[in-house]
Image 1 (tube, each protein chain N blue to C red):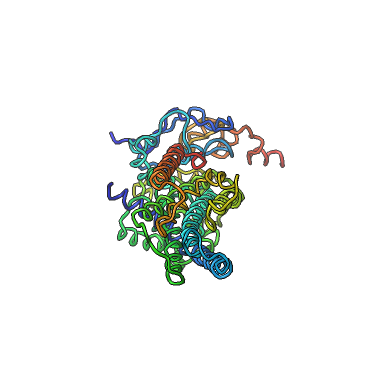
Image 2 (image 1 turned 90 degrees about the horizontal axis):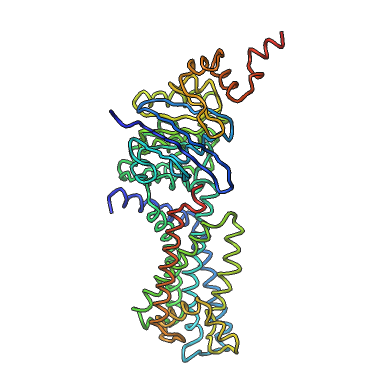
Length: 256
Length: 256
């Protein structure tokens, strides 16, 4: 990578990070409060009734899902909102008319959301280890799992941001697709406790495998095959990245 | 013989909705020239500029910037071009200083160079006091100045000004004229589109008339008047668009 390309990429990334850092009450504070409320409600209220799930304290069982949810939703929201906002203002033309390659642009947009998601996830983790006895049982699964989940949702955010023509398009994807998939993916419960056909239906939800991977990394419990889930997540993330790269190369809904 | 600043051959652009915005435009602008592109709304001026700067993808023809193919060697081609677009496309999240700094970064300028150039341009365009202000807080005239400063940030050899004085007061218009004349004298090639004929008359050494996606005529202001058999550039333009009855001499004759 040439010096100019490195400067270009780092500046593009810096711009993405500085955008959410300027409104951190909304982009970092809000999600943190939300997670804190989940921990409080599920820990204090439900936790007194459901003591354990599969031998794990209920709140500890839930927290890995909350961390994954924080990572996923923030990576997604940041990228979809940032791209749409810049398209809306026309400010994206400044980047598109620069010598930056489609790959540099895509990576910078993707990593902006990834960084935001990672910050919220790490802060959530810090709060969790202060409030609960959250273990980290399989670091070698946890790190790649979190990286892949963050990058996958960052790519999804880029895709929706590029395709979107109005803010309603982004809100629709988040409210009617992302949130149901996450909530029905087993953040707050174990799929094996569900009656049929819901247990089987859950297994068609890709987020279920992501949550299972992250949960396994933390508490060592999983309802899915870890190697298979990691391989599938890697393939899905790679495919989405290549698809987005093609869109950037073609200038789909970016260049006229 | 040095490569022309801009060489466009048989440029065609058909949008997805079937609109044929450019129908085989060929233009050559020599290094150091001040070239004006005039034409009614929808004639293809902005499309030609967007194709040159990578914001639109041509459907046919070639574009070379200082000998670099704008599609295949886009990195070198775009490095040489600065664009001040027609619409105010500033990022509301950024300050004036950041707007220039980030733009410089997108073009691979080092941090030190960016800092110095930002200071210099803010001073040149009387924006030093607004350096830390977000762009949304600027007046319309200040936004225009900042857009021009941004276009010049990476020291382009070809500056493209797409209706830079639309909607600005007389004082700022004259200020901008003075500045672009100065940088043209220093060697920067300029491509200007404008609806103000006196602007083109005063600034441009050569003018091209574009209508219906084709270059209808090209030459100096006097040359164009001669070609259309009229007294001045304004009348030549009116002849081009088929509205000779709007000529001042025609109206005066009718009033008398």
